[in-house]
Image (cartoon, rainbow, N blue to C red; front, top):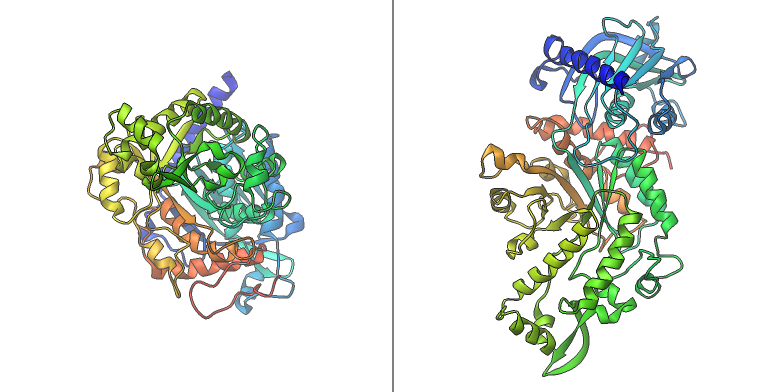
Length: 540
């Protein structure tokens, strides 16, 4: 413990020196980015004029600890950094650099903090990266307080290295101090409308790591299908999945996704949306849902979860007790959106319950009754939660630590109201990737500013980030990566980089370079800026 405290004090002193005393760092507006194509743009970056040759056989990552996250990242980035196209793809001008007699021989990685196992809300992701600093001539230094910061720094380093010719790479000298603007930077995929195979989910996590997104919001079930395999309630997937043999996520599948994400500093936030969006639940557990009536008789249709039965909450407690043992993140997304009250209003038992509780005909109060009991269950299981904005809009009494997820039009007034009430908020309303448009639609994502609403500075600090959403009506394993990327990268930069980084014209060439790097890394991502080509776009 004493050693760690001393190390932390030393790091704090050194870090403060880098921030306050180092005259190299300038504001983004004064920085020359002509020699680099990093995405998302670092907070502070000064490019040097020195140039280094890197020969993969001579280059080493120096890391003294045994942390599995960093060790596996080193193995991964060794391949990413030195991956080449299958044919020569070098600009003729790059030969000018081949006369350099200075090789970059290593990158030293220094992490002061412990080897944390899982990423979490508000984790420290700052890092310092130096190439050709005053105390190193032919090596680079990556300095961070946590393993998560080291992962982000490794990604930045990988983007700074470029291929000169076969077997030879290069990098410019420079100094970077970087950290995210928002702690929550998410991407949601919907695996209910269409099933998305695990290998495709893993590809998506690779793309998230490349753009420094840190939350995979897994909308795992919905009306259409229930692919989650529950050990306690196997009928949910046996009867609710599209195909209970092939279109399911087994415990092994889910563990693989969580582990893959963990090693890339990405949280897996699972969503079980209730009381609406639950028709697939009813196939395996029909008594959970509300029978709908017409002319005083059951019409064979089922509505939202029945909030009036004690059995409902007994089931939910048992189900979520299993879920929290499967998904280690401290948060669950509990949904609560788009609850139709028509079926509830048609059911005589629901009407009698409403009268007993003196709810009148205000079914929002019934929804509030359900949500309140659900939140108590989740709280008893020591989990925190996120809900869609309807829960707040319907004046449901929610707990002070609830995070409200904003997705509807008119989000600026919604942000004002949610933060004025003292709740943390995340924004998705302007980042619906499933709304496909021809042309450079990423520019509209890039122009969305999470702090562009009426509110005090205190209110704006309650906006903890945002999330791009890809709903699954028209995507599956064949096209979800193509349609999501690199469009989602526009959101990633808005959530990481300084608020002053807002010029889409300046961002365009960097986004183009990012797309080419993604293709080189095996991701089949779509063009976003019109006609053009990548040197590696023939890679399959």
